[in-house]
Length: 330
Image (cartoon, rainbow, N blue to C red; front, side, top):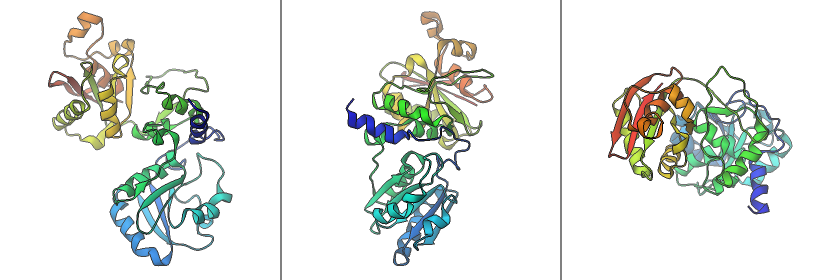
């Protein structure tokens, strides 16, 4: 890895963070309360933005710009959308910035909706807002190292799993591992359990324990399209849809399946991989040839049960095109 990439990742992860993260909204990991700061002459564009993306957030307020507007509303919102030149937003907020995990995110956009530029808090809401503005035609100019490389940083993994980072300092090293393709899927531990970790292990804590888990097994080399179709078909047989999915669960022996990872990333879902011992403890009701051949239980049912908060099946294993098996757990 080049020095430049390492430096980018260190900036990305925030080496000066205080290493704490209590709730996702106050720490900015998920932007839900937005303020559009706009000059009076650009209010029509501000209203257009609110109309287009307003239903994706809990709150979007429009506030007319004045010299102290950021300072006046600092801490009230997860993310500011600055409908202005980036230089103005930078100069007016630089003295307010203190802690990556506590500061609101800032994304600037021009009046013509040409560019959406996260300038602070990329992983803490600004990239999310930029991607939403992209649906209006703006180009999201994201410079965080993992996104620039087309990869999902650990903060983004946390968002995809509706979780938050407990130990912020660790993301320096784990995001470097993301850039080097050395991190792999998130592993989930079942408690009660005490865990001793080093400073290169990022701990994610779920924000809530409801919804469903998509347990997934496959033949080697199954395509992204097969995973997407299999998940859709399975969910159609339940009362749940994609909005109810917490994450995709699988086995550690399947954690490098490119099609599975690509499908999960397309849907912005996290992937949790369970080891053999854990899956054997949560074996499902459907007989599996893999148990006889290699000693592993059926991956889809066991991982769906292991991953669910209630550790029960909603849908037993179904197959898709002899490539992918899916079970739904909760």
